[in-house]
Image (cartoon, rainbow, N blue to C red; front, side, top):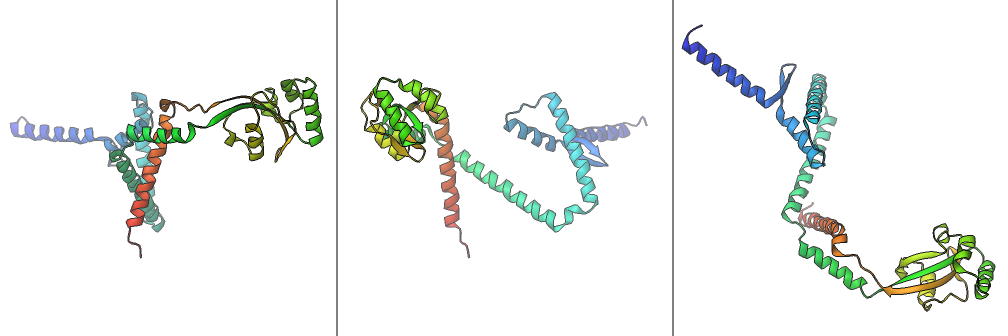
Length: 260
């Protein structure tokens, strides 16, 4: 036992065993569970924004071990040989490959700041010349009610007080009929046309009928359309352009494919 040769053999064996152990997190029923599985689970969590601290790593280790126990049991029953399992595995393989393909495309075809700016400028060009209207309305069910309210307003009745008491639009009624700043396109056609025809401070002389009932409209103010700043909408524009690019890539692959 004191032979230098035997000591060398034992030392080599111990080092080899130590190296194998370092690559695995456990031995389950004689089968090694590689550390790579734990690292893969940890990477998934980190990509989702959840940090992997020592406590979480221990939970993941237990998760990997339990999965191995369950998997061995399923294999002992021959479940991995069934046609249904093979079909499900193929579908999962396809999904993973497709996800990797799309991730690779987006990585190599990022949306640039110039593209985001161009998209914002295009939107600004379409909307910048528009107007926004600040209006109030009182909504009632019957035309006779609307006529009575108009008559009351002409005698000095206060629009906001009447709106709070009689408007059946709960959202604006509670605020004295205030609809806040809005583009005319936000409203139904009949309401929009009547509103834009008013002068600032003017109230409709007759009730405006829409699918919701009868409206008395007062125009409080008009201004040029207020666009959000680029930095405020940049994330939404980025996401939309990424979606558009990916959709174009997917369609180009479909168009080039030879299908018989």
